[in-house]
Amino acid sequence: MRRKELRAYGNSAANRAFFALAYGFVIAAVIVTLYPFLYVLSVSLSSVEAINTRFITAYPIDLSLAGYKMVLGFPDIWQSYYNTIWYTTVGTALNILATCLAAYPLSRRRFFLRRQLNFFIAFTMYFSGGLIPFYIVVTKLGLYNTRWVMVLPLLVSTYNVMICRSAFEGISSEIFESASIDGANDITTLFRIAFPLIKPTLAVLTLYYAVSHWNNFFGALLFLGDQKLQPLQILLRRVLIMASPEVLQRMGGGTAVQALAVSSLQIRYVTIIVSILPIITIYPFLQRYFVKGIMLGAVKG
Amino acid sequence: MAKKNGLLSMAIRDRYLLLLFLPVFAYYVIFFYLPMPGMLIAFKDYLPGNGLFGGTWVGLKWFKAFFESQFFWRLLRNTFLLAFYPLLFGFPIPILFALCVTEIRSPKARAAAQTASYLPYFISSVVVAGMIVNFLSLSDGIVNGIISRLGGRKVNFMMDPKWFRTIFTASGVWQSFGFNSIIYIAAIMGIDPELYDAGRIDGVNKFQEARRITLPCLKPTIFILLILALGGILSVGFEKVYLLYNGATYETADVISTYVYRQGIESQNFGYATAVGLFNSVISFAIVYAANRLSRRANDMSLW
Image 1: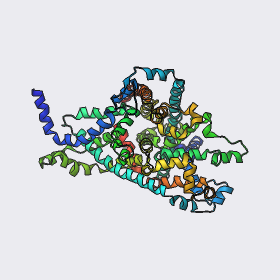
Image 2: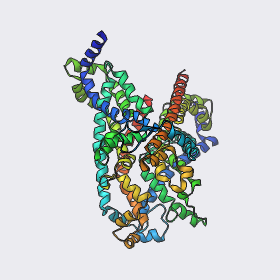
Image 3: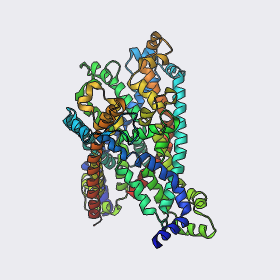
Image 4: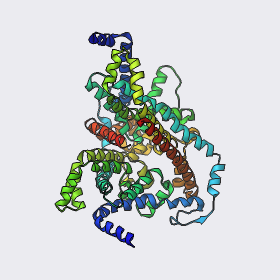
């Protein structure tokens, strides 16, 4: 009886329409999401003649790596790539250390300042002094045009400290009791026992911190006037948005005539691919951690 | 005296915890609490050479100047609308996407569709803005290429104030719909399958199932996320506006944060820019506070 009904349920016209709509919507959403990347990739891999004479849509015409040779031969790209990698690795390492240092004491129930310090950090999520006072403080500290300005003002994110705190709170109290019976103090307990136990959470936080450093544009816009220190995002803005003729020309090989010959459009699209390549290649392998990160936040909030 | 001793002995007992917390304490003091009294600059004539607490008092001069400025209403309107439109369109789409993607039968195809949908969230705003500017470019953008191939007249999208809100909203939805759907997908996966079995026995079709079972189960999640989103209604992000706008589109694009940046950092009108920023933070704080009160009440309701 029930089976029969179930079969009728699966085959009714309304249900077929439903599945058609649902699959259609998902397919459309995926195409809209991915097509821009596919188009940029296609232009970046086409020959200059094809770009100038044909209409490129979803696949490269007359495959060519000339654009990549041009862009990768441009020293500024390597300099800003190096800077971005520096900010990302140093920044993320300090983030993880500092996040644990803050979260561990806040997770200890017996800690006498626990409530006060929780409030002390949570308050900053709701209220800040605003851009100008922050700018003045950072400049007065002498951080303007130094590498540290990309790292120190972003030492921890309050939200991530709270996620990390819940992870420490999730460790069974017996583990801590036996550690203290063995005479371990809080510092040893944190690094030897608690830290290894929350590695999965730390992996998620590492990813979030690393992506935010890789994409950090605002900090560099405010505090890094020196081109030698500027990250990829600043160079990208000059190439992609300001379409700085000077930069495009230098990338294109020196003279305006040569620059025209290589298609400035292609230079721009190659630069996009070169800058997002690290994220795009590791992303499919790590995306389940990203998702886990959201769920950690959701359970909290 | 006894209490003081109590505190001292607790501090000695917890000395290692205090030591661990110290660096981060210093961080918060320097980068969050030290700038807070700096807000007083909003009431001063402040010169770039002055210390954080320097400058001469001028009372409400800067606030008056801002309220009387021809830009006041424009900035308020733009700041509100550039948060409101992305919310209006960006809020329902993740729910719809979650409803549809969870119907995909093959787990592999479902995972692939989800993975693709989150991707734009991890791309920097510079790259997103760069793609928009180049796709919509008058000379070599693909959109105008298609328009002229279809025989239409090319549109100078980035220089036309009429287009800014559409571009900003559509790209915002593109960036975040997949990521924002994660929480709904998890909620749908968590719905008790027996509800669906019962529905099937009653002979409901899939449309009725979505409306009568799935959506009601999602209601608490939707409600709380909506309230939280409303709390952020005056905190439209600086970066994408700054990267996409230009002098020709200020009419619809200039928001409070970009105005503060231009006045403060570019023109060094520190007092005036701080006043504008302070006005913005007070209002957003009030909105966030109200939204949190509401969500707490909603939370109790949904628990009940």
